[in-house]
Structure formats: structure tokens, C-alpha cells
Length: 537
Image 1 (cartoon, one colour):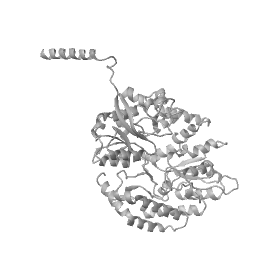
Image 2: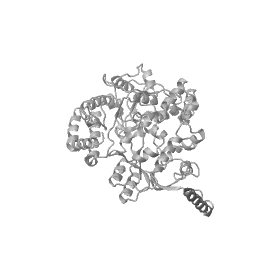
Image 3: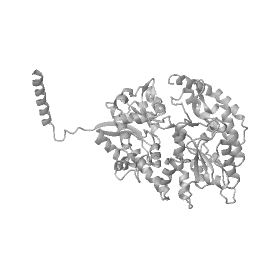
Image 4: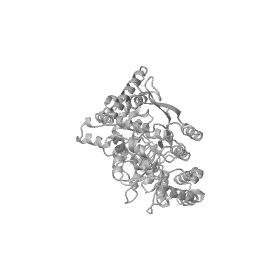
């Protein structure tokens, strides 16, 4: 009875409070969250929209009751401005950060421990989508505690694959290479046997960028064929970290064949002054026979060459499965699982759960259940790419769900059971297969996502399924010696590799480089890396 009287009194008091509220006050004001993120100045928005006023910011307010206040924005200067802001100590509630500034914020004791919050607030869907990305989350874990949410990526999609001119193989009566020696022979033939039949010595076998490395026209994939893994850290048989660049035997084997290619005229002698844009011109103008790059390269110069091709030959280029220089299967190195960007929360933030609510909403809008209308509004449409707008983006489960593409191809899956993204891609694949070459997107989706041999997405999935990936384990902070000497050592590496390729130095000169690398700081870097790795492995 006493409980009932108290309850009635409380109810009456609450009613009086409600009646006393001003009109409109019953609707709670949105929670303001201050955020920091780099803004891409080239991003396109619908008329009247901007980075801080668009479909996603409105969705955050409508669905989550939060209003984002962008207090730290920039484009190319974001990392530098973020470092200065960290030094001042005046940080927003949440922000995106690169690896270096993540370490700075950790040192300054600015970050909230997200371990328990992630368990409590991440939806079941988000947890399921993120479960395969253990390597990415290791990079965000310090002392066993989750201190950030990383951009997630699939290792196989961060590897460097072999792209080759299939039409040139046919023109010269060559079979598809099944090993690296046949690949080298094909590249030499492309430079010496006039594969385009114009009677002019104007073709090259291997497109190579001046920087030597990278997602387009780099050498990572070439070296991997010799079981060399330059520029990454991986475990040896004893479980210690080793640096791939200074493993003499496999590196020298690859360098010997690069020198052979250059001497045969298969590499453009002006490669040392050509950036990726200039090399891409050679690929797009059909003057290069092969190159190495990430799976999405079908979308760039190859796509451009097809769209400019009056003959519209749809299969000039093939993507090959990893080739080996010997009887051992080839493994491809990858930094795809190592995040370069993280989401962090200020330890003084009053509503840290809102980060996880934004993550949950992200996965909801990328899911199979999202309507075509919402897909066009929040993911991608013919004019804009709204998935680039939100504060929380680039946290991926399976990128395009290739298993759904395969199901559509073999008839075991109905279109309505696929994600809106897959439905859109499938429509474009069918357009291309029917002979509609009017859009570069059709070419892009056909060669990147159709699950067929020699298609880059298919090769990436097969490589992943075979476990043929060597992950870069350098997900920790930059070490003291690495910060002081790393750029100098990298410069020495590139100089000797160029000199060996061009024949200015013999292949054995690489041994002297390795000795110098250790003497000039490499030995300390190896020690520091392994001291750190012992604390996390």
C-alpha cells in the first residue's frame, strides 16, 4: 500500500512536469558529438549538400539522435593538423587518425578504452561482419585492450597480382604462363617480337613505375614469385620478425631476372622518371604487355584503354593466379589487413556509445535488407558515392560478397536474396556480357567482380581461399631507430635496386647493401621490432 501511494505521488509529479514543459520540448534535442576527419575536397555532393550537411548527417540525427559538429577538418594537411591538435590537448569527442597520430594520442593518455563498449554496443550483425578481421583489430589493441576501431580490409585485396596482355599472347602463339620463367619469357617476347603487328619497335614487356613499389605498376608481385617479400615484416621459422628486403637469396633471384628484362628491352629505360600517371598512359595506349598491381587495376588504365579502343576487344587483359619461380607455391605479400586509419574516442567523451551506434548503422545500410532507394541515397548512385560521406565509413565486412555473385552465376541464389550492392553490380555485369560497352562501370564490374577465371576479383578470392598470402605484421608503432633512419635506409634500398635493374651494378652488389642496411640502423630496427612483437604475438 505504501508502495502504491508513492507510485501515485510520483506519477502525479511527473504529469505536472510534463504539463509545465514548453511546446515542442517533449522532443529531445540531438546530442552534439564533436568529430575530426579529413575531408576529400574532390568529393561530389548533391546540390545543397556538403560534408557536414548530407544524407548521412541527417540520418545520424533522425535515427541516432546525434548531430555531428566537425571541429577538425582538412584534406591533405589533416595528419599534420591532427598532430598539432593532439599536442595542444584540445581534442574532439571522436576522430579519425592515422597510425602515427594514434600512437601520439596513446602516449598522451587521451583515448578511451573501447573493449567493453564494443562488446556491449556493437550489434550482432556488426560483430559477425567484423569477426574475420582479427589482424586489423590486433593493430588497434594495446596491452590487450581495444583502443580504437580500425578501418578493416581483406588481405587478398591488398596483394599485388599479375596482369598480362592475353591478346598479345595469342598474337605471338604463346600459351598462358604457368610459372615465373614463362612469364619472364613472355615479357621479353612482348618487347622483341612486335606483338601489336605495326612493324615498329614500340612495345614493352613490363610496365614499371619510378617509385618501384605500390598498388599500380610496382614490383611487389614480381618479387613474390621468387618468395621474396620486400618492405614487409613476417615471421621466420622460429617465430621472430624478419624484414623481407634483406633476405638475400630470394631478393637476388628476382633482381637477376629484372636485370635480364631490362637488358632485353622489356622495361622502358625511362621508367625511373615516370610516375603512375605516365606509366598508365603506356598501359592505356596498349604499349605495355604486363604489370603488377592490386586487383582493382582493371578499373583504371585497363578500363580506360578499353573505353578508348575502337575495336572494343573485351579481354585484352587477363589477371593471373600467382606464379612461382620454382616448385614451391607462390605466396603474395599483403598490407591489406593492416589498417592505416583508426576511429578513436576521447577518454572524456560523454557518449562513447554513439561511435558504435554509427558503426551499427553503417552495416545496416550496407546489408542485404536495404532498399534500392536507400542504396541510392546512402551507398552509391549514378552521380554520387554517398558511402564516402559519413564519419564512420570504410569498415567493411566482405567487400562485394563474391559468394553471392557466384550464386547468381550458377543459379543457386535468387537476385532478391542479394545485397543491393550485388544487385547493382550484377545488372552491370549482365549489361557488359550482352555487349553493352557504353559505360566504364560495366567493364569495371565485369572484370573486377564476375567470378570467372582471369577476372581480378575471382583471382583474389581464389588466392585467399588457398591461403597464399603473407601478411605484413608491422602493425605496431614506428620504432625509435626506424623513425630516425628508416627513410635513409629506404632510399639506399631503392638506389641499389635501380642500379642493379639497369646493369650499373651486378646482382651481387645487393649483398653489400644488406651489410650497410644492418650497420646503418637496420640491426637496431630488427631488435626493436622483435621486442615490440614479443608483447603482442
